[in-house]
Image (cartoon, rainbow, N blue to C red):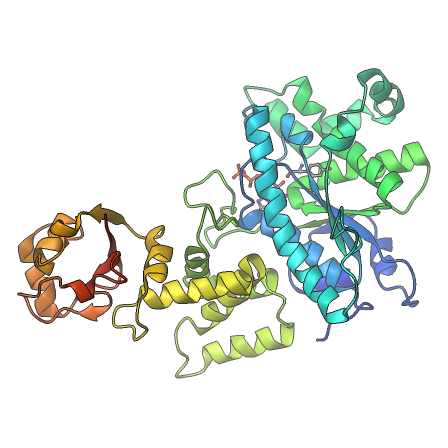
Length: 453
Ligand SMILES: Nc1ncnc2c1ncn2[C@@H]1O[C@H](COP(=O)(O)OP(=O)(O)OP(=O)(O)O)[C@@H](O)[C@H]1O
Ligand SMILES: N[C@@H](Cc1ccc(O)cc1)C(=O)O
């Protein structure tokens, strides 16, 4: 299915499993305006800078924003510089630890960078394709289909008395207490602080502020954001006495065991290449179980549903090469998050880490994979003319010389991806790639990058 400015984004999200709830069916009709010249919607999604990077769960917000962009609407990514100081109780059993200003600033920089590179890349490609201007010098993407704002910019001006008088008066305590995020916490032993209880009003006020000042009329978020989003639509209705502000939530992305992708558990799938290399990111998707791959293709990629159906059929045919769908998924998601360069880096590292690969290794490629595999530094004298067997043990790749000998016999020990055939093989100058580095591999999985100090 071709996407155009006239495609109804709500229908698209629904077909792909990206729609949980909308505050009013009128949003659907607002998206399918028969008049192609009618004003596009302005849609926002907020991200509290509670870590230095966004993760796979947060990617859904960026994907949904991107779907809005692709259907001709404008988007705002909001960084919660103010709200992160309070901590969203939604979906949390315990109060969030307080973040100091330095951490908040570092996290904000990290997240702004990620959002800009993911959403900005698509906007720029689009703008480039349309051969038009990329906006003003001060804010190069403001005129394009997306902008990044920080709610600290307006919250730092808000005075408590004004807030209570102008906003708090319209918020009903009964409604606030009935929100899922509050009910759950009130039942817990620790209860809930007044500060956290206020969070929904802060997010609600953001929507009101953005509605009035930036023309934003839709807020999106994960299903746990419903209470905060409706706090905003209610404030807009009560304070401004207008309809026309909508909320949309998407389901939380779950693993096949039913747990959610988040940042608290081990092995979070970070979007920042500094926290998870494009190679590891790619490999994660390359290895997802068959049971998840079609669902992920629908949710995490922009491939047409027809194409996804064909891929699904392919999977059932005899002769299907295992992981072909995963390969496609990994390519599409890595390209969206890390761009063509990141995908190329993932391919290079995948190739470099494949024993028996034909590509010749250079220093940069081996250095590039060093963050993903164990590495060590040795002096030239500890490497030059040393047997591969001894080196496998001194670097910690293998436990013993006998294990190394056994592996050579089985054809499983590699030096710079070439199989070591001879037990007496010693390292010569030509084995040290670019005079700096070498790669030892024991079987397919265990690697050791050796830097020559
Ligand atoms: N798995 C997910 N699927 C979809 N959206 C998610 C997912 N995880 C988080 N989000 C969205 O990102 C927002 C921010 O995530 P939040 O910081 O609350 O929790 P988290 O990053 O999942 O961390 P934790 O692992 O500590 O629960 C959430 O409110 C939610 O809307
Ligand atoms: N509450 C959202 C972030 C957010 C912050 C401010 C908003 O206005 C909107 C959303 C979260 O936990 O991720």
